[in-house]
Length: 459
Length: 156
Ligand SMILES: Cc1ncc(COP(=O)(O)O)c(C=O)c1O
Image 1: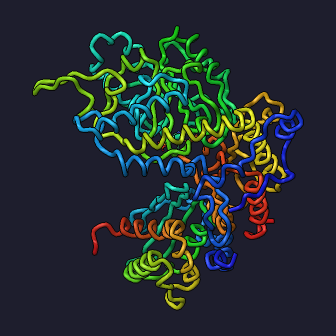
Image 2: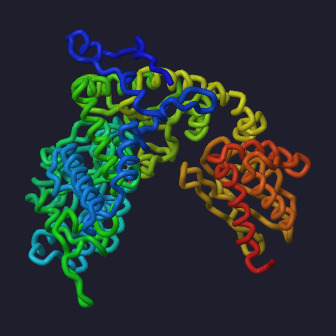
Image 3: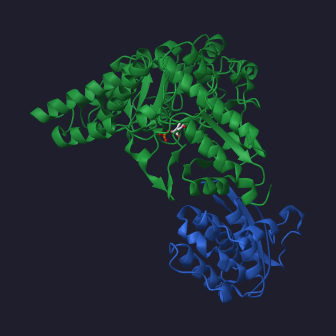
């Protein structure tokens, strides 16, 4: 569909970019790379504002997967035939590319089927250590992270269920408690409360870089420092980078976390692939979660010895074509960043974030979930993602009306029930942008939304 | 938005506001040994819609329905219409109506509900074309089916 240029609605940062003669990113320049964006929905051109749920894939990604399947496909790390060797090379090359995307070394990157699998890997690994299955020689290292009776696993009130339920289960199995850092009304974390919740009994601190409902960028370094202060550095810090990876350049080692996860399908890549980053000493010390082929050195009928990381955590046949395609997604994003400049991309992100938030604020009867005013003066960083409620109209009905205009948004609790409860509701509407989102998309969305309350007779 | 109007018919929007049978369940007298009744709590995990519905039976007849719930206009309207329809029916009639409703909802617009049998609830026919909304329409019906089954645990 449209290659509609950004409208006159350009907000300050982009104008500043322009005024300063810096390169400007116009998403119209990349939209044609995404075949799906050309579809019509209910007779209207698609306005896709659900990238936080899953992003669309550029042709380069679709082609890379197809090319691999048509010319190289075979099992990796097994067998000596030519294709197997080529596939292994591409698979490991993809690991290096994706590791580079988050500032990591290839050995620090474990393939998973997605963020959920990565978080479960960590929680179950600690559970296995709690059951006495520490990696020989690493008992002391892992012991400091393993929760027991009287210990705490600290999360935040804003976590996606993927970064909450595995910890609840681990706590239930080990006798530990899960404690949640509260969220302020504006969507930022209550860091004073965090300081009080983190104690020498904290074994794990698990939190999202960006909540999938609030869009606020949490102060990772500050939280890591608070955990270090409280525990002397013994707590395992786990970062859910699902919603930051699509929007911000990431350097996970620099953030100082022990472990981080993200999903391929949210960063222009395929489903069924994701990655877990871990500091080398941490991966060394974590026992495996899934067990079986490809992760062992020697197996007897009495027991098995395991490969070092990352293979220790990659049991079974891996999603190879997806890994290769995820690397293509990373390459694609790097090419766009090289062409327009990372600053221009970030400026566009901020412009969309403001257009979305300010546009919503101006409509009557809309309540934003987390409305950090500090975003405007730069004291709070945000990504272009906003959840809201419409007074008198249920989120599901709002979504239906928007859908009739071709606008795709997410409705419901977005896998964050505790956070919705904290904001006094069960469901909200969420609009979220991707690299291909234009100011025009946001305009169409706001226009469609402005008719919702009168349709349902509440305005 | 022509397609939408087949979903959001006037009657649906009316019932979503009127919410027949909606009440604060905590305010109702407790069910006792002699009042044959039961409660069912159902939720739609996808969008967070919830309903708690209480049925009271007088022999084989549904003498009362009361519910409280949160949800979209389709789920609220459906609960209201069902209350209207089911009060005074026998449990056997109700089971047939529920089966017919379920079939219609699964029919993707192929099986409209008969107005004579379903009354206002026939206006929900259009929902079956919007597969993502079928669960919303079904929620109260599933709750009533479950509550009725619990109210008469050993018969049938
Ligand atoms: C913040 C956050 N964490 C975790 C997940 C889970 O990701 P996946 O379903 O790809 O495993 C999501 C995706 O919805 C998310 O937004």
